[in-house]
Length: 87
Image (tube, rainbow, N blue to C red; front, side, top):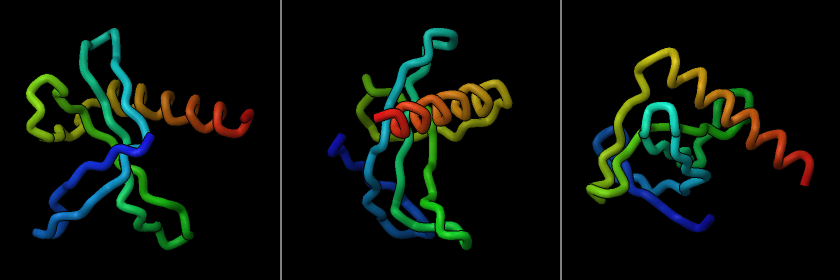
C-alpha cells in the first residue's frame, strides 16, 4: 500500500504512510492504521489508528474512544502481524 495522509501534529502538517484500512461489519465503520515513522523510546515504530468516513473524503480522522473498538483494532493488528510473519 503506497497511500499517504496528512495529519496535524503539534500544529504542523505531517505526511504519514497508510499501513492498512479495514471495514468493521459489526459497527459499519471504516478504520485506518498509519505511521509518521516516529519511534518509541525502545525503538518500535509508532502506529496510530482512527476511524474515518471514506465517502466524505474530508480526511477527517475520528479518535477511537470505546474499549470495544480498541480491543477489536488490537485483534486486527495481531492478525496483520501474524500474517506478515507467515509470509
